[in-house]
Image 1: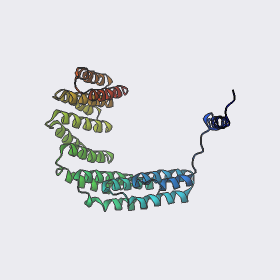
Image 2: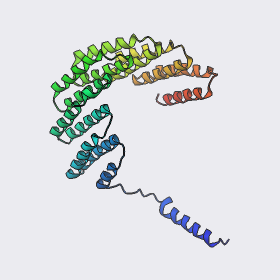
Image 3: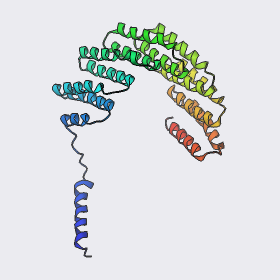
Image 4: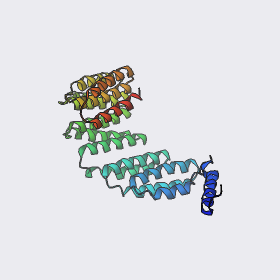
Amino acid sequence: MKYPAKYGTCILLAMFWLVNFGCSKKKLPEPSLQQQYEQALLIRSPERRMLQLMKLAVRQRKAGDRPGSRASLEAAESTCQLIENLATRISTLCKLARVQVYLSQKSKAVRSLQRAEGLLEQIVPLAQRIESLSRLADVYQSLDQPESGVGHLLSARTLLDQVDDEREKVSAILFVARGYFKLENTEPLNQLIDQVIQLSRNASQPRQRTEMLLEVAGCINEMQYADRALKLVQEAAEAAGRVNDDLSRAYSLVDVAAGFVVVGRNNQAEISLQQAEEIADKMVGDASMKQALMEKLASQRKRL
């Protein structure tokens, strides 16, 4: 069969593409370190740009490109000023300090932490300030300056009673507790764990109590308090069973299943999922809401 000239040209182009691109298994060459640096500078989000520059600085140092590594870190430092959210800026400065410690630039790491400390009083939400103080304490520990870390944790503890929202308070206490755990300071750690467990148990609404207990369980499980974590997940399961609204109860049970997986109790996780499934099977309302619940169920079951 003879094709008109224009179709013949199209066929030739298609064959050329298949031969040179479509059938080729060769990967495109990775950009050079210099090209990666130039690409990082084009990232519009200051936070993302800074994080990418820090990752690149480590890769450059490992490749022996010390001048390139210094340039990337300097660009990251200058980019930090463009991050508008103060809590995010402090968090990113802490990450920068960690990279500087890793690259044996301890004096620069201290300077980054001092920049972060200068922003603390400007953070209005107390929960965010507590989180920032805890982050700073953690980095000072990596600098072998535990005294500065303890000082920040003490400042954070004094603010805890001023946090009104119960959920925010639970998260804030856990941030401080993690700091003491990393400092291996068991007395204040145990005091905070007892405080946050009691706060979670006293939550008036079953759904909120479930969520708070699970958050505490996940945190203290990481601290090797496995038995206490399991007990809290079991308490969360009881609280979830008391949630009045069917849909909310089903979602709480799925969250409980995730909690059981974290503490290594997959059999109990399966029981919670089956209970949530029974609720979903009886739902006759909004089909889209049921579909969303079933998708969450299926997603959690894959983790068993």
